[in-house]
Image 1 (spheres, rainbow, N blue to C red):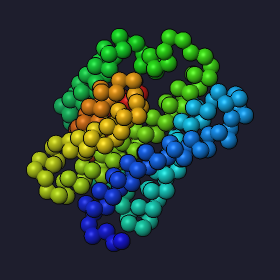
Image 2: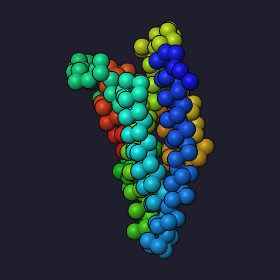
Image 3: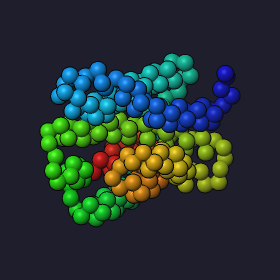
Image 4: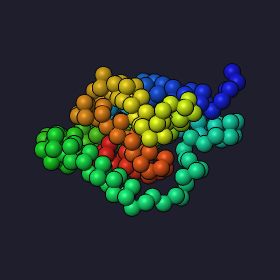
Length: 225
């Protein structure tokens, strides 16, 4: 099928990314049992998450290379904003938004350090490894989130939607798709909070002048901590 314009390519990119977020963990669950001899099966959850992360990295690389070679498109960066410095007022706003997100999350877990809160009060070595696997998976998932934000925001802007360059439409769509999916499968302890954070991620993308690297670092920091 020939892509008629970039906006349709952006929409397809978003849909492919979303499908890979859903499907890949199932493929990882089929692979993880091959390593049940490690820890007598007690580390299967760790390998589930680890293989999910590994497969995602491979998928992202394949997509990135394919888009560059066949479509002359980049999904991992924005040439227009690469190396661009942000004004101090914008940096201050980003700092405030990020700090408020961390504060809201911290208040809900009684100001515990989130990675340790996720572990719970009692855990053994195998449970620690399982959570390390989740940590690794989420680091890679943040890459998907930023790629999807770029694609969907570009889609709305090319459609000519009113104030598309100022409203985080991509974040709203992320909330209604990936966010709802996470809510259904119980991907996060603070499910409702993380649902609405997807809108914030879309807003941060706009605040960083569509810098994918800056957005990724901010999303990862909020998502993990």
